[in-house]
Image (cartoon, rainbow, N blue to C red; front, side, top):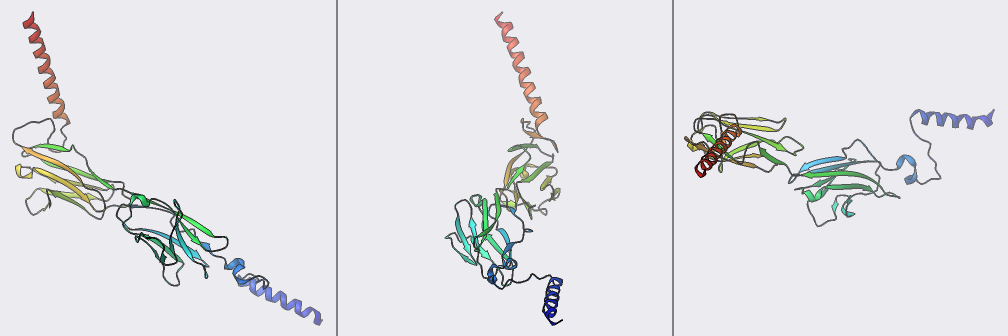
Length: 278
């Protein structure tokens, strides 16, 4: 009966450890080579990040069971080592490794990002063999665009109606300012000025009602984190140039009318000349 006791104890031992979700340790294999102790990447992190020029970009890498291994960030295009642990190994001090004690997250911070920073970056762990996880950074140039001709001619008493859209921006701008010349448009300067800004689809509309000569000048749409856009507005009395903007409409109708008028005049002149020569 006694010879069965060790076997029964071993069965109970295995049963308890399996119930606790633990693997049986092989005491002949070093601890650092045990399967459950190997580092691995958490795949829930974002692998594709887009930012705009001048903004700070963050690439987040999470490593479980790191132990005493080191985490490095490598720039893929030239295999340049950027950081090891929390130390920076590049002369470009825009790159920095962020890590909090006890955290599984190792973040590569890129300040004042430039278009040349676009590419793949690897989060690498110093295991044998090394393991790595790739992250892609896209740095784009965000631009504003005013939906109008570069120069607009407005009849005195009509409305100035300008629409600005922000292109190639991963996030809506936190603000969009309108300038008249070098000054931010001030609603208290005169009545009849309104600005409507929508985060989706990233547009801002400037309306100046009953425009007069003092409203002439350069108008600039300047969003946060985007290149600005400008148009020149001329408020005229009595003139009718081809680029005239009437109220809320563009100058296309007037331009066509003027072109037809010039064409008709040219044809009549030609006919008169032919009649004289005969």
